[in-house]
Structure formats: structure tokens, C-alpha cells
Image (cartoon, rainbow, N blue to C red):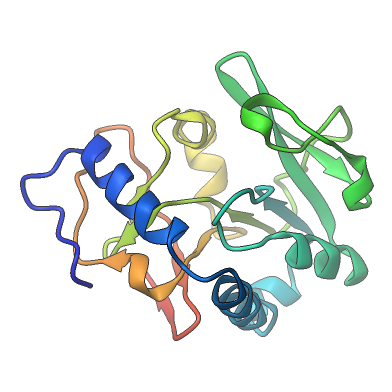
Length: 197
């Protein structure tokens, strides 16, 4: 990875990684996205998961629509985020048509629905611009996932829960700036490998 976080702020790194990802060829992004999710489907953690909490991708993010469709067809309960004020909540969807065309930041969102039952095996797919080898992610700066995970820190880090980031391999870097409220993820999945933290 040629981008280094040394002496760069999170804001500067966000701009660098976002521009790099936006410059990727669309067909390449789609192909890499499919390879990332194929690795996820093969995991035992996915096979036994009762709940899948997953962001709805926009722009140059790894495309989560095929993941959502596959998880639903596999009989998983799928939950997508909705921004409410300064927080996010996850609501169950039964198809992509349950997502409103444009929520906050023009991200399709569920309007309402069932909350996830964290007593069941759960995978949470979190978005990121970049991740490092310790499992820390560089988000978009809104802090929505950080606040959500902090409030449920003990719950989501139990043995039945996995925090997973699916990301293009060129966005997995050696280190990133860390804040006190950051919660490391459990697993990084790229098109090339699976990294367990």
C-alpha cells in the first residue's frame, strides 16, 4: 500500500482514500466486490449467522446490494441502517425495495421495521474508506458507527457477534490514526485474503 498515514490527519486521509477509490474503474470495483462477498459466504461465521447487519453502499463503495440479496435468499434476517438525528438504528428489510430511495446523505434507508436480536449469531458489515492491520477503520467522519458500536460494545464484541469490513485490498494499510472511541473490527475481507484480527 503506497499511502501512508504518517503525519496525516484523518481528514486528509479521507480525501486521499476517497479520491483513490473514486478513480477505480467501475467494472473493476464490481468484480472485486463480488470476490470479497464470495469469501464472506464461505465463512462458517456467515453460515451460522442469524442476523446480517449491513450498510447500503453508494458511490464507489464495495457494492453491498448483491450481499443483501444473497443473505435474504439464504434465509438470514437482514438489517440496514437508518440515520435518526445523530444516531443510526438498524431495521429489518425483506427486500431491496424496502429501502427508501434517498435518506440522509442520499443513502437508501429502511423507513422502519424490526430491531436485531443480538442474542442470535450476528455479523455486522461496517463501511470504511480504509482499515489497518490492527482492525481500526477510517470512516467518513460522521461518527455514526462509532457511536452505535460504543453503546453496544459489550454486546457486539461477544462470541456470537462479528464485526467485518469488506474492502478492496489496496485500502488495507499498515496503520491509521486511532481515537479513544474507535472499536477495532474482528475481520477484514479483501478480494485477495481474509485477515482475522
